[in-house]
Length: 385
Image 1 (cartoon, rainbow, N blue to C red):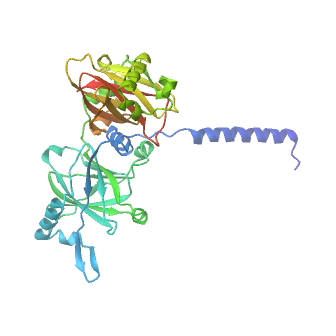
Image 2: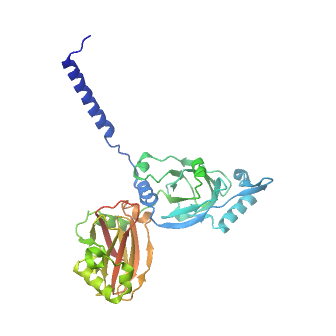
Image 3: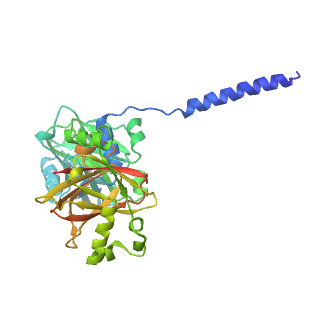
């Protein structure tokens, strides 16, 4: 049958319409539901590799001596015997291979010569609620848990929902158990991929599902995200931005010289790149050139009557350091990083620093963390402890 030119045009038009509709259908972003608990841990702690690390725990080995050397024991049989069970618990405890539920994450170290590793889990009465205990990992592995009576605990869920995957590519495993108060033996079973890649450490977060973030963090999140109005804009400046005379200088050289240090203070004051007590509890918008990796701000608390402790909250990835502009000393950071207390209420919170300051002027250096996105602005909130 002969096809006319008009028929060809008609069929081509319909084909084009069908392709456009199909593309729109497949390109439409899928929305997945996720609980605030899962998002706070998966996105805020596991995905954020700069969140607070509670502790590094070297997982224990439970083995028997055989003619071929040391090998994994049949723990399921050993733990049935009270004396063996107590010996295992005591050995793990004395070797500090012990974990407890915590708002921060753990780094777990394993011996790559063994497939299985073990830890003593201690769940106190204050940590047991109506909900389940949940384990999150940044690698593929399996779990088995025995209670203090030697009984294998039935797992409630070992699935990981699409909602978690959509907010955290680093979260690989999630396990949920109904655990009461007491001591447990936890067996961590490495996957074939972990064995092949010789993975010798991974991160874990362990929390009861009933855990609640800090109410204070909700307010912090509202200020950082702009839900509460107010704030100041300051420039994230390099030395060259301040004065072309600084182009061949570096901060260490300037800081070691009294006259150069005073010149830098004056340049920062002229550039109005200053944060002081008037900025407490307000959003500070830091605007910067994306080519800049290191920037400088002047912290001026010289008018304060006494020393203070400040918290600096960032919604972007920075390393910071504070330098006494008078006595040429670096001010140690008391603590840094975030826990579920904060990120459970504000999943886009990235870093928290706590610093003790006297009534002086300080240089605050901000360094972008390599490998992270580099937007043209970020938000900072400063609070007094």
